[in-house]
Length: 198
Image (cartoon, rainbow, N blue to C red; front, top):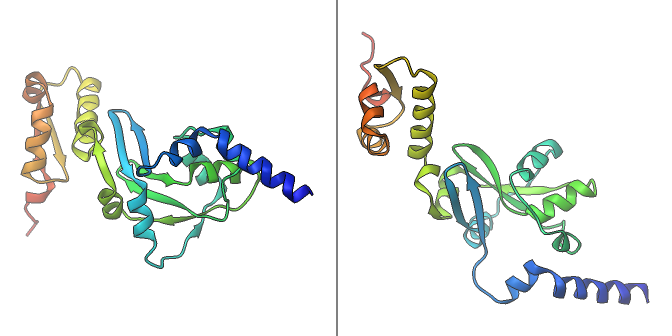
């Protein structure tokens, strides 16, 4: 009898859960990752295909999982019926790792002090899951933001010399994002063409 009541409760939870209701409508599963410069959108289904190659999920240390969860919000109604046995997926970006899939499972694991496992995908695999990205969230955008901060921190200097790890194309893109005044104040060179010492 108790098992029957739990089954009814579980079905009721899923019927009233906004996330489950949305998924019943169909369509692909995506993940929206907010950043300082905009939102990046990732294809979760593609990430799941990538990790189906036989790789082994790894146990996520609790403190790392908690840190990754701080970047996300979750729906309380969905926590009650997620399957903690399903591993999450951790993606990689220039700002560090992020939980691409399994936010609700991870949150439930933390709340109930359960182990949480996740598959890890590398930066190239993560990039292949990217559907849309604000220019400010790309490596070029992040570099431009850092240069602007440097210029603001050294407002009295009018001839800053900066060396970046990138090619001429990267420098050209950064130059396009900087204002004419910012471009006048900064000289950008690349480590790519640095001469080796004899």
